[in-house]
Image (cartoon, rainbow, N blue to C red; front, side, top):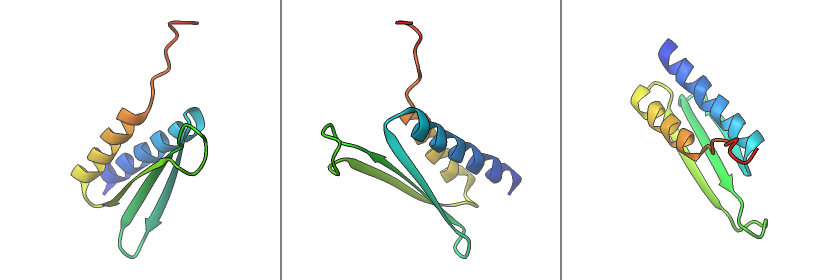
Length: 86
């Protein structure tokens, strides 16, 4: 479970980083009786109203492979800041 905890921490770190640096809102919900972690990302539409896209994952924290898939998805969403234009 120690490895899975590290993956969950990395997922939460990435989600918080996305929320604070991008225009997406990430939320987390952990259900201890089912050991499910739910991660949702809301992408706002161009008009800024409630017409955006929400992407969600619900994963058992005991499943390392599935946690890695969620982490890979989050890493692909995160926009890398570029210093090219200063």
